[in-house]
Length: 126
Ligand code: SF4
Image (cartoon, rainbow, N blue to C red; front, side, top):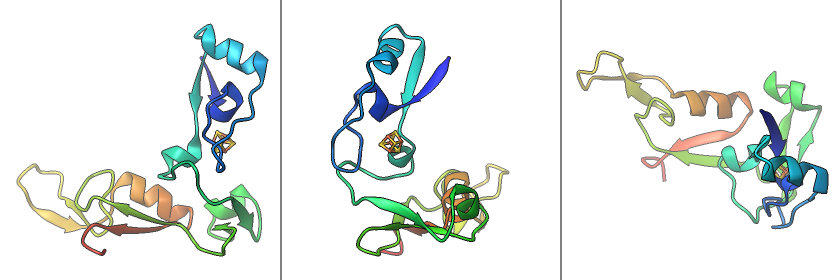
C-alpha cells in the first residue's frame, strides 16, 4: 500500500481549501493502490486554515524542539483536547489499572503535539 498526500489525490485539504491534484496519484487512489493522508488535518487543523511555515529550521529541528511551526499571523497553534484520555489527556490520564484512578500525565497525541511545540490545552482550560 502507498500512503499519499491527500491534496495530491485531489482532496481540497490545503490551507486555502484547494488541492494540488496529480493525475497519476489520483489514479493510484482510484485503483485502490494508495490511501490518502493529510498530516495537518490529522494534527487537528481544519480547512481553510492560516498558512504556516517552519521558523528557525526544518522538520527535524521542530521534532528536536529547536524550531517551531508558526502561522502567518505569528500565532502559535493551540489545540484543545479531552482531558484524561489516553490519547488526548494533557494534564491527567488514568493509571492503567482500570479502577478510575487518575494520575498526572499526558496522552499519546498530546505528547506528539507537544514534541512538535504545539500548545495543548484541555476543555478544563478554556
Ligand atoms: Fe497536502 Fe495536507 Fe500535506 Fe499540506 S499537509 S501538503 S494539504 S496533505
